Image 1: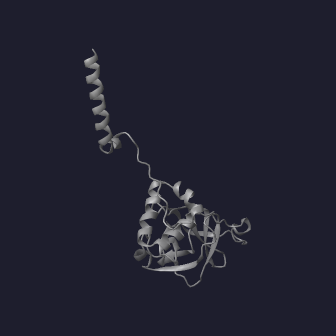
Image 2: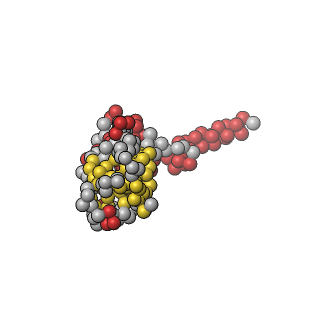
Image 3: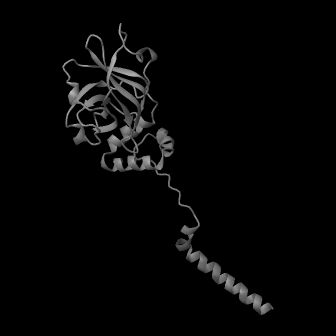
Length: 214
């Protein structure tokens, strides 16, 4: 009995030694590998918020940083910053004696894992013939120097598609809230098929709304 116990102890010792040396080979099957990668160059105060973003969104930003770190940092910082909302007094429809007539409308959509928008964009004509673009229930990803455009392409998803033709209506007033944009009288609306929220410094499309006649 003592000899058997002695043999078992020897075998157990060899087993412990073997398990120790082979640990790197079998441990991945039983131990999770948790990654919490900091965003390079981002303000340390924003790093926890970045870590809470969905994994696919983090991956897009990190890939972007490999190509243009300054642009990626600016976009991430804007995305993690507080939303800019339109003051309530600026959200109302323009006053008129008669009801504005809707000419075309469309819904804002997601562009990719990072950039998206919701709400509606509608072009109205006033009784005096003037036109304006109105956003309702609007919310989009925030970003630096966002601008509002009418575009020729129905649903641009790249800089080249966007540059097929466009007209700027001005800086985005806020990434949250109802808002109005005057359309210059010389703009031929028959040429334009979508509304685009575009980041001018980095040439990134944040959200688009394809317009359909009402």
